[in-house]
Image (tube, rainbow, N blue to C red):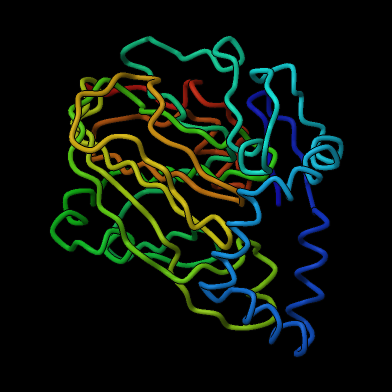
Length: 288
């Protein structure tokens, strides 16, 4: 994967997970085994393991391997890997940009931004979606044509809690079930797998950016997207929810003439790079 930071420095990162999946998807026996592992019952069992004290031994090696700066997080004893994975960060480590006209990143991640048309296809966790297939709502999809789709992809080393992008009247949650497969781009190099990830979204009637869709997308062995609120009045930077173990994605859909996404993010997307951002930092400016 190719990344750039906000200073324009470029990085290329191929993880051990990439290498392992390349082997698994290039050899038929491994592909068969991986298909079995993606079954819902196996995913549920894996989730129970990650929730149990038996998974605690995984924490130390993960911290070392991914160079997690634990001083950024609240100090506590973890009783399972998922407790660690959903660890809470110290507020000072993720300051929220409170300038009303600034659109903030709702999470840590690698961000890309694309114009929305009815025919445009967006790659999210190695599945391709049109705006309509993403939402499963043709009428709502049409309202965002001409706007912008912002995709924030989390990796395992990121902070896995996410927040609201602005003060808003939050509408009800919509959940779309899907088959959960791996989240790695290597897979489509070797075998055609057609899938949809589980996802949840709501409409936010925001104070500064108009009507915004905020969506969370799950993946293999995530399965649990924890959103805290139903219909509610919410605040910029207020915690919206959290993901359990696995890579995950947050998507923002912005209407036409609502927000100008920052030039470096747009330029990096065109160049084939994702831009590294942290929760609470500016990624765009209101046009209103």
